[in-house]
View 1 (tube, rainbow, N blue to C red):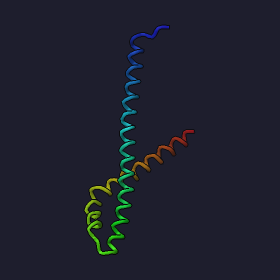
View 2 (view 1 turned 60 degrees about the horizontal axis):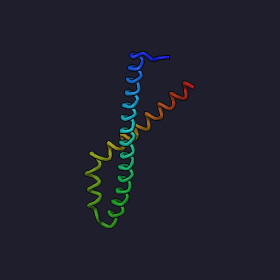
View 3 (view 1 turned 45 degrees about the vertical axis):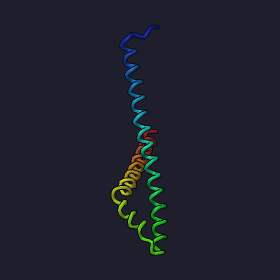
View 4 (view 1 turned 30 degrees about the vertical axis):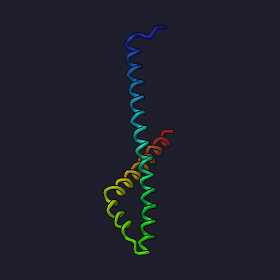
Length: 97
């Protein structure tokens, strides 16, 4: 049974679309992994800054305050948004079953 050229082109387009979407998914997954490490680093840095602040070494705490708005708030927001979207997707998938 021979496959005509039109069917072969459709199969190629579909496989190219799947490969391309997997590429985007992998990029997003890597971004989220890096994001989690930023959050963990931020939490540890905050704890160390608080401990050093008790000994009147306040420069790490000032640095944390400077980095809070441009780095840590977007990371935390992205993390919770991803968790919320994942929870909604899994809930809708479970309702379909």
